[in-house]
Image (tube, rainbow, N blue to C red):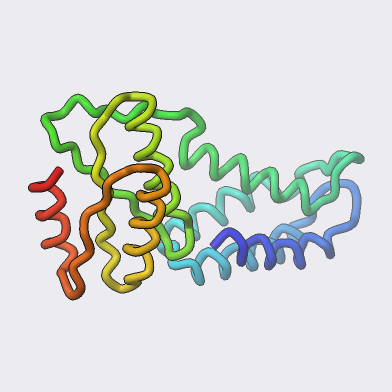
Length: 179
């Protein structure tokens, strides 16, 4: 999602070279590409509408500093709004529930879920002394299960054995029993 968005925005922002305040036309053109890229990445329409409206309100008339381009100014406004919406502070994961404590990592295809899962598992084992079992419920992309197994082997983190044709709910149940 972010690569596509970056490519689209790069083209729009290359055209924003004027100095002074951002015009409504500049911002509208840039946000049109943001809207399309987010929708193509399966972001919900209400979320896209809210983000675009908030950024439009902040960006139109915004003074462009001499040291940055108008495109960089819009990028900063989009970034600041995303940080505001998603949160700027790290939140500790509460693992004080009765074991096993299931954690679900969810995201768009290609967003780094598998790698993030392995990194998180390694950190839980090495820094917190937790017992971890990784399991992939992605049955639409069997390579994800294999990728998680390979990463688990590299990090010395156990992974749930792969059973071809198993439904995600059955994988989850088996992981909870084994974990």
